[in-house]
Image (cartoon, rainbow over all chains, first blue to last red; front, side, top):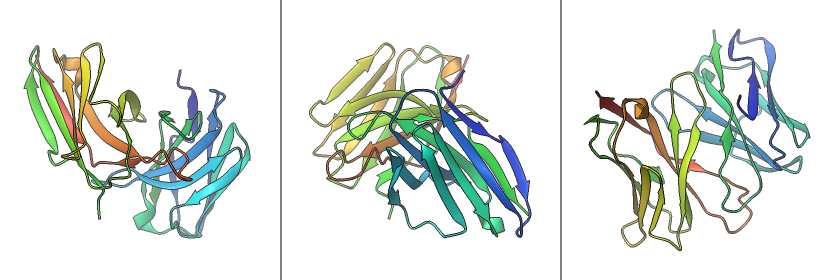
Amino acid sequence: ETGVTQTPRHLVMGMTNKKSLKCEQHLGHNAMYWYKQSAKKPLELMFVYNFKEQTENNSVPSRFSPECPNSSHLFLHLHTLQPEDSALYLCASSRGRQNTEAFFGQGTRLTVV
Amino acid sequence: DQQVKQNSPSLSVQEGRISILNCDYTNSMFDYFLWYKKYPAEGPTFLISISSIKDKNEDGRFTVFLNKSAKHLSLHIVPSQPGDSAVYFCAASATGGTSYGKLTFGQGTILTVHP
């Protein structure tokens, strides 16, 4: 059982839909992250939260809106996405900032039609 | 500009032999490096890491070597097993400043270990 759980595992949405991705970590970590993996590209960091505060927004378009209500939960709200936003979205958590590895969830495979 | 590069998209190795996966980086601020393994339909799993104060870290069959002057690291798997077949990602982090655990990833190398 993974310590980081993402739902849903797969999502197909139209360009006018609004949907949310959910991430929950059971590891007692303080930092949570959203990463995006597009086909044949490296994982790209999108957002970083530390102790519920957003510490980094990696120039992500406003159609992606993160929310971190507490240290254990992280959401990614999606609105008016484009087909090129289709990708694997991965949530991760870590204990903190220095010399700690990130633990990843299984990802949500998003397809925008 | 890609700061972490894995120039070999794939590697094929016979079971029992050594697998060597390579990674190069350009940002001299990186001081912590990690290797992740990813199976299809799963998230990346942490494998092994190394701090820039070391040049080698070993964990069972896995050893990571860091050459700071060349900005190069490698992952050695010996002996390789068919279950090691996966995509391997190199990642780097600059632990100073305000970057909370921000990881920069390479493109990944697909390792196939043949029985």
